[in-house]
Image (cartoon, helix red, strand yellow):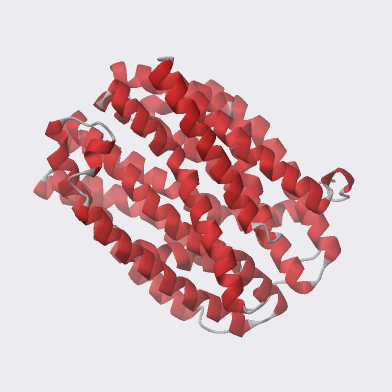
Length: 438
């Protein structure tokens, strides 16, 4: 199969899988918005960074292991594949236990730190408690998906996400609209949907790689180190948008109050879909780039990267056109009050300006970590929330009010795109292939 055909067979299912991974919270928001209104929407938005932290842990470990596995495949290193797959699964299991305990003990404090209080805190606690109890399914689902993609299972990964999404939709309707379980019902539907995704992933790897006979489960200090270092960038890439949510929520509350927070809740749901589609392009390329990197096939690496930029640019432009055209209709989907509709339409228009920058970053960052340029990837990933803390809290809003909060987002994205382009030029020489051994 040509590299072009491999690109589309990997990227298209990956885009859909990432889109469905973000739709869980949006579906919760849709039903909660219809039932509980603006305050319910704001509560899910405040609580969602905790869900994102769980998913980021799973994604980071899974992608760190998947990159090492893919390089071993490119090097035709069978023992290395087994070692990294086994060690990745061990780390995922340990993370399931640790995250469940830590979140159950600490989620009320986190929600208060995020700015929740009063009725908003009460609703957010109802949602987050169930999410924390089901952390094991979220970590399993998000951790196994990158491994599945690197074993030529992009379609299976997509199907697992679709199955989980459909389960979530049906149970959201049942728990929220019919049984009136409110925030608890929304969280339970999400957890059960993610459990379905996790089960599909376990069954695929069980049959594909015979996990019951795998000899790589014994933890290797060097193997775990490589997985964790490799996973630092995808962990941050998954978590960073939600660190942004925390910063923007804080700034919106300070300069615009509860109304601005509720407005941003709707905008963040919409923007999340586009970000995840673009991340699907970047991460869908990762298996191809990492294998080519392991095999020293520079031409294939750059062919995949060029196709990714073209695809990401098209997705960004189409999304901008659609979101702008439906900017007045989107608020009604979430059941927001008529007073908020105009605010959402205005703020969404500002956020659309950054979609082209997001497209560049969401492809450049996965390229960097696929070829083990971890430092470059981390600069772009962690630079966004750090810059936003300065621009959105200290620079623009004191000058122009709450509008400065919204404008700060595309401004920071443009600055990071400039940095990313510079780093890409610096990495233009043929990368030195790191030997990944068992």
